[in-house]
Length: 176
Image (cartoon, rainbow, N blue to C red):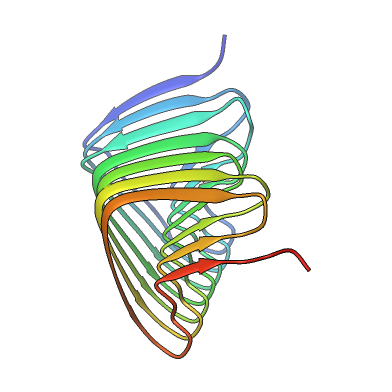
């Protein structure tokens, strides 16, 4: 049997490099209602979904990171569904949402501040959907939505605001 967690109004934070507030790994299933998940440190994702058989569902949560390459929700291999939540990152290459598999978001407020800190980034075949949400980015090369080759983002009723040199609202990259 896989590990399962049901978290209600839990607060979890970390204060060092390579540390996660929530780590879903090895067939984990995590359901979150409310709460705060925060990290400070390099490569310190607030939520990390590291295996293809793991998933995280979050509603009404606050997810924040401070640090270089500290992603708020990193669904690297697994799936995430985030609703009615606030996502904030402060640091370079610190994305709001990232996936190589699947992320679904609805009624999100996503704010990033830092160079190359995309609001929502899909890569390596990842798929993202985002509805009824707002993305604000502040930083050079910090797009609102970024899809790499073979990946996609489907957005509906999403407001994007960027400030920073080459801070594109929407950016779809082609293969070389």
